[in-house]
Image 1: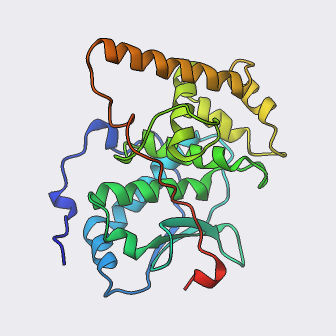
Image 2: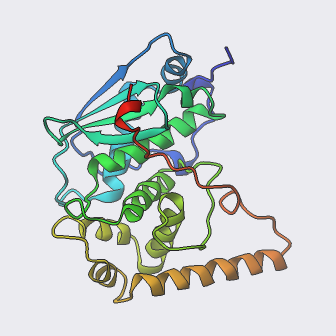
Length: 268
């Protein structure tokens, strides 16, 4: 079995990875279910994650980034982390009896393959917790925006993955960090709280893309903003090339989606 890094052996947290706790929100009941305690992935999880501290910290990070104390929030009452072996990486779902009780499923086999287990596991946990607390326009929201908000939170919690790529190819709603970095551009362009406003705009009614983005981003449509983002990245790359700088970690790599629930017959 490979050596397992432990929390006390991890590098000290930089300011970007410290808890984002301006307000202490009520924490729902948190549970951990290990399907196979003898699996190497269980050892990796237990050796790198302090359940009584890390899970609550990520809940507070998510809530502080998406809400203010006066915000209306989803009524999530519990989150159960289910660690088991299945095809995939991680996904979030509501329970059959009550959608206010969430389950985050994480593949044990995946945990044995990550190079920086503590950082990566916390990043996955942070991303999935967003799905437990974000609004989704009554289930009609663009899936790419849903996943982009989750990775925007992960980015601002200081837990971005080394393989993440910042680029403006394709459509704005490609999801995950592709959309997450675009949302960060909007946050900087229109001021702190912009993504929070976008999330709040998904609280009631069906998804209305034009109304949502124009209301949060100075009356502009999202396609126009996406073009501005592309120009910004191009200018940034040109300035870096002139200065002889190498691409940053966010400018190389590939997208690896996490939220891929297994088909029913695979969910064993």
